[in-house]
Structure formats: structure tokens, C-alpha cells
Length: 537
Image (cartoon, rainbow, N blue to C red; front, side, top):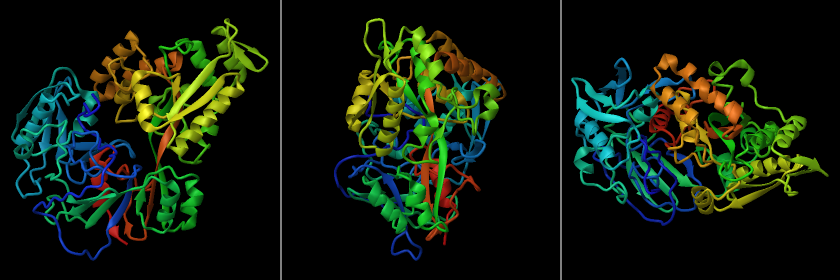
């Protein structure tokens, strides 16, 4: 069922369609013209928006989580996974990991001025369980003197970040709401902003003058659509857009170098993009074919194909060697180098011989591979075309199948593909979620069809491992990646976080990574921390 997301922290997705106006006037919304400038974020790649502020919907507009609704807590993936409080100020595990105490910030208030209480937190968890939206093994949630106590059906150490990203909603508003159909056009949250206006091209958020945590420095934030990267590049250079994340080609030349004093880029390496082969389709079920393909790829050339400096080659475990080096054995950290001789030896073990520059199988036919990707994403097309070119050079009849986003999703759901290059898997506070989403037979994002008892056992052990045992518990999964290649790691995806300092300063940066820069697509805590830390220039 794709109309809702079975996650604790529902990520606010991209929205589509009509131009409609909606208003919400929480009691704390500021009115009148602001002396400080509004802040404009290029947050959507679609031409039009459909109002939806249901934090449990995959179609919720960005800003729903972080600006309007708040999560419990998070961990800063840009800097040593530091704990980031939000509605919760601290957490305490019980021995064995089957229970946890969460201390709530008793200052928290909804935008109508009423208190956010443990009852709202308990209601939210019950609501998520009732509507089958909870992907955590939560058994019971009960009230304590300073917050809530959660018990789990099994040790839940590895689920700590998913737990923290639970979005809390007011019981008095959400009782009786349908998470599948309600678009929640008058949202009431505890976050620093209330909803202003929504049109087909933008959503405006107004600062609360009674926000419970601090004074809100940015009086208005406007999230706008941009479906044209050339236009966006011009808007960024003119400082009509303060913050953007889109894949502008050669961003350093087109943006940063236009005004090096004020225009900034920080590619945050938050996820890994593998080449995903359909393991249910021959010959990709053969590990030697997968190894041959892996050894045929020049990963540096792929990452430089569109926007040098934004992507980086990744090592064969899939974990980014730049930030996960302590987790990876030294011999396994570096990305694989292209090695045609070794690749041909692997293909030979699968029955493919080089004949006239082509890899020919026992049936006399050339090895063919069509790579599925989204045609609307110019950067994705460029990377995929480079991949296909490299595989062609080793003797594979490799082509790119660029299709619209809806067709891409449809083919992926039906498992109708040879290979995919487009999906990315986000790193978390430990490797469990990263590997689980890629490799578990129960995961909807395991689209390659990997089904392996040893993998399931290793995932189960890592899920239940205490924090000080998680590194060692991740080793069997790393070995499966190295020896079985259920997916072929290619690159680590750097989100091209672009911002200017003409109007606002205090942005997170590589030098001051106090939060992972994000408009609320990954974490509302990341977004709120960023916007609450800014100062007028």
C-alpha cells in the first residue's frame, strides 16, 4: 500500500498537482510585514503542489515535519551522530534494550497555547499501532514522572533513530482522523511555525511568536517549486533563493564561483547509491556475473560524470569510507578499482567468453543489461549513461532505460528490470537500517529480491546488539556485501546543499556541522535546528 508510510518518522515527501490555497492561523502566528527578510527554499522538483500537511502521508509537503510538527529527537549524521534533543531531552535504555525511558521537555506547547503532554505521546504511538504505521517493536507506552516509558517485544537498540523520528500529534485533534485520506489543511503542531498560504508553486510558513523553545529568528519561510535546474541556477546566483538542494550541473562553476564570498556548497554524504541487479532474472542471479560487473566499473568516472565533487566513490561494503572507517576493516575500505582482466575472469566462471569485444554466453548470445533510471533527472541520466558506457567497454550490451518517475516506480514495484541505478540508501546512527532496507527479505526497498537466511540472522543480531557491540555485529553483513554482492556499491550520494549568506548567516557547514542541513525531507529535527540557528546578515 503506497498511500502511507509504515515508518516511525514519516518523511515528508514531494507533492504533486493542483494549485489550491489553504490557511491556518495558529494562535501564535505572527502577522504583518516583517523587518527581516523572508527565507526562500527551493524544496520541490515538481511544477505544482497539492496541499497536504498530514505528517503520516507520503505526500505531505516539506515543512510539515520540522516546521509545524516536531519529532522526539534525532542524531546528527553530519557530525559523529551526536544526540539532538527536540521534544525529548534525554533517553535511558533499560538493560537488555527491551525498554527505554524518554524525558519530555515540559515547556512544549501546541500552537494554540495548550501544553504538549505525555498523553499526546502515548496517543501518537497508539494511533500509529492502530493504523499499522509503526515499524518499531513497541509493546506498551506508559506515563512516568518526567515523560514516558516504552517497552518493546524484543531488544530495540538499533531502532533508536527511528524511535526518535516519531512525529507527535495532538490527541484532541487527531482522534478520529484517517491517516490515509486526511490532508490536514489546518495543521496544529508544536513546531516553530504555523501554516501561511499554499499555492501551486509555494508553501509559506509563519513564525510563532510564542514558540516554546526560543525566539524564532526567521519570520517567514517559503518553500518553492523548481522543475528547471537552469532557472534555479539563475535564481541562486541572483540570491532570489537562499537555500537549495537540486542537482545543478557543475555547481561549483555555475554557482559557487559566481560569488565565492557569499555562495556556498556543502555536499553532505548521507546515502549510498548501488547498481541494483535483478537477482530473480538470469544471469544476474550468478554471483560471478555480479562480481564481473563490479570489477568493470570506474566509480570515479561515474561520480564525475555530471557534477564533480558532489558524489564520491564508495567502498564495497557500501558504508562510506570517509565517515565509517572505524567500522570497516582497512583492507575493505577503498572503492574497487576497475580491473578488466579480473572482470573477464569472473565472467568466464559464469560461462561468458570475450569474442570480438563481446561477452558471449554458452547459448551464443551476448550478455545484455538494461539499466532503469528516471529520465527527468539530468544528473541521474548522466551517471547511468556513464555506467552503461563502461559496461559496454567490457563487452556487455548495456543500455539505459530512462523513463518518467511514475513508470520507474511501477517497473520497480513489478520487479520488471535488469538493473536499477537511482535508488539510494541512507546511513543512520548504526548500519542496521542501512543494511536492513537494502537486504532484508521483509523490506519493501529490497527490490533486487535478495533472500538469504544468513543475512536475516545477521540483521536480527545487529538489531538486538547493544551500542558497544554493534560494530562487531555489523561484520557479517559487511562480509555478505563483499562476497555475495547482493547489490553493487557505486557511489556515496552527496546532497548538494547550496546556500548564500547575503540575507542570513549561521548556516551549518563542513567547518561547523551542528546539524545535517535538510528542509525536512529526512529529519524535522535537522530542519528546525538549522532554521532556529540563523541570524540576519
